Amino acid sequence: MIEPQAPAPPGSPQPGNGPGGPGGGPGSGSGGGPGGLVRLPVRQGTGRFLVLAGVFVCAACGLVYELELVALATYLMGDSVTQASVVLSVMVFAMGIGSLAAKRLRRHAAAGFGAVEAALALVGGCSAMALYAVFAWTGDWGGPWASGPRVLLVVFSLATGLLIGAEVPLLMELIQRIRRQDAGGAVADLFAADYVGALVGGLAFPFLLLPFLGQLTGALITGAVNAVVGGALVLGLFRQDLTRRARLLLVVANACVLAVLASAAVLVDDFEHAARHALYGPDVRVALRTEVQEVVLTGGRDGRPLGLYLDGRLRVSGRDERRYHEALVHPAMTGPHARVLVLGGGNGLAVREVLRHPGVHRVDVVGLDAGVVRLARRDPALSALNEHALDDPRVRVTTGDAFDWLRGAPAAAYDVVVSDLPHPGATASTKLYSQEFYGLARRVLGPGGRLVVHGGPVASRPHDFWTVEATLRAAGLRTAPFRTRGRLADVAAGPGRAPRDWGFVLAARTGPALRLDPSGPRPRTLTDASLAADARAAARTRVPGLPPSTLVHPRYAG
Image (cartoon, rainbow, N blue to C red; front, top):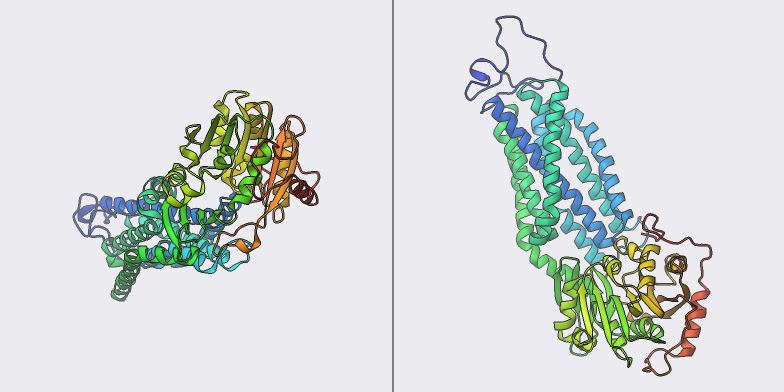
């Protein structure tokens, strides 16, 4: 950072006075050498305002890149605090390294800043498309952090952080070259513009870019804005600080970056179609982005099994869903079952099994995503699979957060509560597997009422499953854990794979009997004997001594 100049001798020209000062015309400033004041085509005050405006825009773009990478991490690898923490911590670390490295460019601040912005526009603008391509064409992102796609995510985080960090010392140098001032004042001006820009970028990402442009197009447009503003600031305001060759190289570099971003934006629809084909196979029928998640339907006609993917993960497989939903619902329906609450289950498949039982008078469904509910009612294949259960007059569907809904539900209102929610390892679902949540569910159970919970796969995530069981016991419920196996032949290609098994916990205030209702329907895939065998199989995987999961201390793996 340049120190303030010593006062000039009386009578000598002062920077900012005379024809080149605040009251002067074009050509303000003096000298164009490195480290000195630059000759500007505008007044000093206007030039300073333009630099701070550039800081504002670049900061907004930088935060969009950060949020984009976090969104990609949570979408591609699961909504996990771990993923977001790794991406953000790598970026912040890289920003510090970038700031240190940029000190060597201070003598050529204008050219250095122009090059940094062009590179940042290219890396940040293309990162979403590049990472999604790797995700689509290489398969699941599960497994250790050493896997190739995860390393690529860290590399993009590192590169973006290095370039964002390099902006700060270069911009500080440029501000000081317009008008020298004390270091504290320059830092205050720079960071004020930077933080306000970050606020605008942070709000624009979820409320404008994602809903109206989507993640890929939004990132490309952000990169184009970044390149235009960075190039215009350097070539327009600090033109005299660049050699003729540097100006030419900067123009060519920005033109190439904009050409790449524009070409990608033109081809983005074709790219998404090809990536979706690689990800889900050629049989994609429906692909939409709701307010909550990406929803994809495959198959469901010409004898091909239906597949429902939510955020790239297989949630329903037409070949295997009956094994899951029968195990989830039927053991819980042994006993009073006139009033049933289904948490999740917006696809209508759990409701289908509930309605098979005589004596059901009312079923309340609380689903988070209205888009999934609409598909379950209107899509011919999905509505046929759920047997139009959501249109039954006994069924009432509410869209909302299950936790908030339970807080307002009346006590002892239900005989059966079916918790058909994503596995507890996802951060967004952790509160729905907490002691507090199960305490609310216990409150709405009537006399003899039962709660059944999907606890995720047992074989691959025994720690999570037995934490669910320990949490239910901590909420004052007695438990009967069991599992049912999926068909290994039904493993789907792409990022969403059918699990080897599903774990369930049946819970009640008194010890629940794990058996089928003798007066109820006969499930195709369950018998009392198979339930007893499933309970013994689950018991062999028990992880003893696990503490319960709470809102302030979640115990599930990311």
